[in-house]
Structures are given as C-alpha cells and as structure tokens.
Image 1 (cartoon, rainbow, N blue to C red):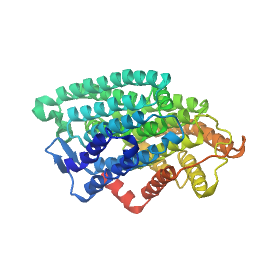
Image 2 (cartoon, helix red, strand yellow):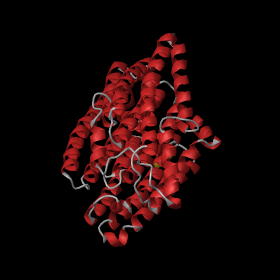
Image 3 (cartoon, rainbow, N blue to C red):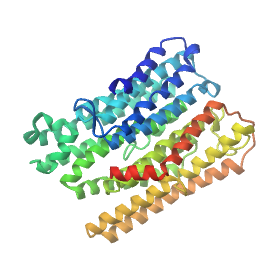
Image 4 (spheres, rainbow, N blue to C red):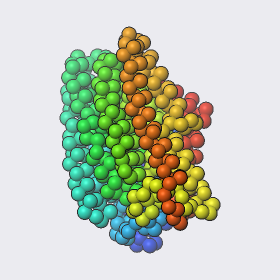
Length: 470
C-alpha cells in the first residue's frame, strides 16, 4: 500500500524534468492515480498497518486522505490552463509539479503517521515544498512572501516540535520509546504521571498549529501569501496543507481530552473566539477575492477546531470536508473572476456565455452562497451539530448561560461575515460593466469535481461514516 500511495507522486516528480509541452496534460492525468489507493483504504479493515507501527490508517486518516486526494485532482486539472490567465513560464510549470510531488509525499506521511516525530517530518516536508511553489510566481511580492512564509512556518513548526518533546517526556516514564506513538498515548493517557507537563506540551504544540493556520495573533500572513501566489497554489494551501495541520490537531486533542477535557475546551475556545473576532472585521474590510477567501478559510478552520474540542466530532468532520472542497473551488474560480489579474469585484459574474460560461456562473454562485452556510450547504448542517455540541458540553459543566452568551457572540461575528459575502455577491451580479470572459473546459471540470464532492457529503452513507468516527 505504501508504494501505491507514493507512486503517483514519484511519477509526477520524474515527469517534471521532461519537456513541459509534452507533459503539461499528462501530469494532471497522473494525479488521478492518487485517488485509487485513497479509496482502497476505505475497503480495508482498520486500523490498517501501512508501514509497521509508523504509518497506520484508521477511519479518520482515511477520510482526510480521500478528501485531500479529491482536492489534489481538482487543483492539478486547473493548472493546465493557468497560462491562459496569468503569465507563467515553462520552467515554473515544471517547478510546480516537481514540488507538488514532494508536497504530496510529505502530506501523505503526516496524515497517516502514527508517530509524532514522523508526523512532524511529513508536515515540515509539505511546508518547505510550498515555499518553492509560491516562488513559481516570479514577482517581487511572491519572493518576499515566500521568505515571510518560511519564517512564520519555521516559528510554527519549532513550537510543534518543542511541544512534541514535552509530550514525549511526560509519557516516557510509563511508555518508554512507545511514547512517540499516537496509538500508545491514546490507550495510556489516563496513566500519565505528569499531566501538567503533558498539558504544557499540548498547548505549545497546538499554538504552533494555530499559527500555521493563520490564527490569532498572526492573522494576515496567510492572506498575504495566498494573494502573492498563483490561484492553484492558494487552493493547495487552503484545501490540502491545512488538512495535514488539522489532522494533527485532531490526534493531539483526542489524547488531551482523556486527561482534562475542560482545560482543552477552554484553551481552544478562547483562542478560536479571539481569532474569529479579529478575522470577521478583516473580512468586512477586504477588497479582493483572494484575501476575502483566505480570511474566510481562517474563520472556518477556527470553527472546526472549536467544534472538535467541544466533542462535536461529526460536526467538525462534516465542516472540514465542506471547507476542503469549497475553498479551493473559490480560489480556482478567482483565477477566472479576476480576469488577467484585475481585482474587480463589481460585475465579476457578468459576461460569461455559452454552456461552459453558464455552468461556471452557476457553480461559482453556489460556492459563494454555500461558504456562508446557507442551506442545503453541508456547512449549514455542520454548524447546527457543532453549536449543539457546545451547548451539550456546557450542560455537563453547568455553564449553560455562559455558553449561550458565547454562541450569541459567535453568531454576531458570523453575521458580519455573512453580510459581507452577500454584499459582494450582489455587487458581482448586479453592478459594474459587463466584459466578455472566457472559461475553459478543464476549469469547469475541476469545479464540477468539487460540486459533486460537496453533494457527496450530504449522502446518508457519508453521515453514517462520520458518525462512526465519532
């Protein structure tokens, strides 16, 4: 299985050194092979050992792996027509696929890792490879933001490593060298004799992960990086790289909740409320699509973390899947909406003709309205389940009135974001001058992949599977 998971990335890496003209349309097809081993993980009985006790697939990692594979296919489909929207050299194309292959190897390792050290190595590999993908946009802004990203990423990944060392130190007296294994920590968490040391390590680790996702106090670096990058690279950041970060959050939090669930919730709750408070006003002031969608992504990742910490596993995972499909779809749509790099919101949905144009118009409108949780978006249902889990944990700890107040504050902040998105949608549809715009087949196909995947999240089978993870 390990060879099947990594073979598509290896083929892509080799092909990236050949002539771009010959491989430009072969490379997206190669990415389709990423999906097959991800699907096979669902068929196998779990936990399934992929590489000893180091890489192990369970229901959670199989779900995240499948979601990431679908996003990868959508992104690589859109890359083949990128040169029709922006200026990009053949060497930049080659570099994108070369570092995407390395990125995918790191991502696979981090998602399936049962070892904290191996998880960190996979996450660092994925992070470093994205630095070079940012630089495929050969501009001063992109080069500057690549350096900024590497600095912020180094701070975040160092915090994660230091936290892992403290967690390992807290569990080593009872587990020995097995203290690096997520499965061993999960089965023996209640026996840890130094819970305070574990909680300090957990807090530092999660702080590093929150920084990597653009949480408080570093809310703007992610928006700046995605603005400076090409659209497919921004889609990778939002739809796939954050998957590697959030699955680490899921695994560490599951262990920490066995030690002191209330401490975990208070820490995550405080951090996410601060993040959403700041991000909601940044979204209200945003002037272009890339920053709008990037900051919206930070808000949704904060909600996912909050729902998970409150015990709403089903709501968190449903929200995660919806965000992973919606946000890349919106970033890829931005490449068409901005029309040769012109950041005009007014009238952006005007001027699309023909079947492909009408499909693009319909899907983009659907994605914009779905991201603000209008029914029947999966985010509408995930937020219902997520907020109900917050009320449930408040009942158990006799803080119901306090939690209701916090939920009201959250809804006020989310309504600011809702208002801004509706205002932008109306401006795109009704204002501005109509200009003729072209949509290409691969782009429509990529958006259809995301639309069908969103619909798949609402099937009874998906609900049953996610509840099984709960």
